[in-house]
Image 1 (cartoon, rainbow, N blue to C red):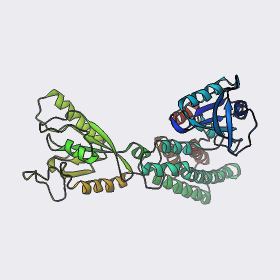
Image 2 (cartoon, rainbow, N blue to C red):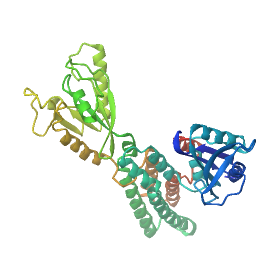
Image 3 (cartoon, helix red, strand yellow):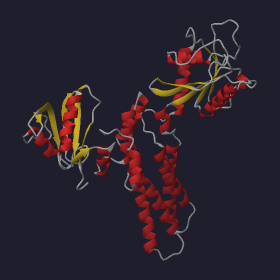
Amino acid sequence: MKNAATIFALSSGAPPSAIAIVRISGPAAFGAVKQLTGRKLPMRKPSLAKLYDPMDSTVLDQALVLLFPAPNSATGEDLAELHLHGGRAVVRAVEGVLGRIEGMRPALAGEFTRRAFLNGRIDLNEADGLSDLLSAETEWQRRSAVEMLGGAFSRAVEGWRTELLRISALTEAELDLSDEDDVSDQNSHVITDACIRLRREIDKLLARPAAEKLRDGLRIVLGGPPNSGKSTLLNALVERDAAIVSDIAGTTRDVIEVPMAIDGMAFIFTDTAGVRIDSDDAIENIGIEKAHHAFSLADMILWLGPEEQAPAHPNVIQVETKSDIAARQQKSAKSFWVSGKTGAGLSLLLADISRRAKTLLPPEDSYAVNMRQRALLADAAAALTEVEGIDDWLIIAEQLRLARLALDALTGRSHTEDLLDVVFGTFCVGK
């Protein structure tokens, strides 16, 4: 990135803290550090140095300073880190001085990572992995993000791209050298078989659950008639009073969502209004409509009503609540018998939810592809599918080119500024 401005930002947590790390990236980074310290510091070695305001020599702080020369730095540019004492006034004073140095400005959201991408330090998939790692709240999310950041997906894409280049070379050779109008049988089979293999590998990845399920959490919706114990069960599952509990039927009128982690997986438990068909209360009917909408979005439904009234859904878990009450509703033996008041049976219910969840999420210790990546993979697979049964070299070459373009867009070999704005706009300023 020639002639780029030098940027700076706090890249650690918000002060006050024990340490605050201010990063500086760009051609003026080392000059700025020299102005602050009054001396030249060694590269790639931590140096303890006092920082001064160049205008009046006021001491700002005593900091640990590290310098990383381009291109072997996190951003691919000259990069400096100031490890300051983590008080608000210290950070504010240092940022104020940096802002007065010619050629320097505060970083935009995601600008450090964007520069790392533009300078070839990471690709778009690894940037997605970093974004997911920064927002990870569960162990499952962390493992998936580490795999993506570590380049596992990008290596797979690069393997597919290398194979596509080989196939494309065969196609171009036929276009240049063959005098026949029809495709030779030998090369036709080689190309078709290779395209089928690649498409199957891509289809296998597309068949996995999407990354959004892992990131946002699986939706577990509690449903049933009024006063069936949904709110009591929700509070017992999340171990806090998230929903109002009352003996009065119809207390819950709106959808209540509570996030929770189970066995390192993210979930959103949703309490809904009691479902019945004979209500003449307009507000209650709105709540019932919202409940049905929640059922349509659910990954699992905990159904507390009569079994035959359960919503049509592939993952309905029949639950008999109030198992501590003798006059409880009778359900079949396959149901989970629990008590929201005593906690009886909850551990078995949670274990079943966890078991089912593992079939709905991307594999553990593996990367998951997001909506952007899935769309491009689908484009590549569609182009490869078009090659099958085609006997025109020009059409084959064009479809292979389209497949390559889709794979190049995955890693960022081909990109638009709008796409980069979307990807890096999700980062905080210090990243």
